[in-house]
Length: 228
Image 1 (cartoon, rainbow, N blue to C red):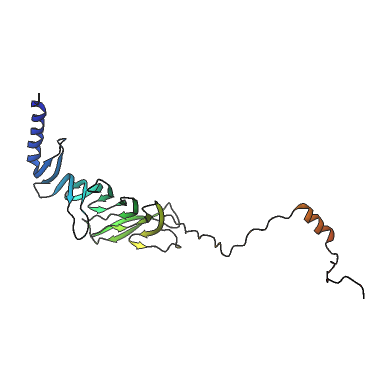
Image 2: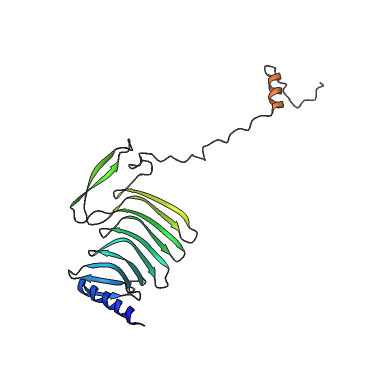
């Protein structure tokens, strides 16, 4: 009855053993935490990290390709609550990464990965004036991802957006300068302190009265009742 599943798992084990130096099998027979014959991490990984320097312990899972993180990686506390959803390319953060507390989202980051195999990388950047044109920008590879795009900070308990920052190839942008990707400048909010309230239209009866009395000398009250 159990011969076929056991034989199947045995074949998986023998195949994995031929490809990897070390690995482990999940309850479903998936190969996890594999290190190939070159000593590089490959495939699905699930790791528990102990508490260190005041930071609580956590678990993370994702995929390695040639010893580099690739695609979406999830991080959880030991209660199973999500702590982070990060995206990787070439082992560097790429795209949107979100970070959480047990109460809710805390911040959202935006990254641009640089190929670590190149000393310099060429990135196509949209022309600020003509969105149909792209300019090739050469970026020196410092070994890290570049902050690129909008970063958002939240109140985790209420989910309310507190502030934003905008980066362009790791440079913090002035909020009033044109967006180098869209070419659009940020529109300043109206100054409500200086803005005058709009005047209400006058009733028709008042307008008719003012029209009739226009040009006539108005009587001035002096408070006198007459007499000597």
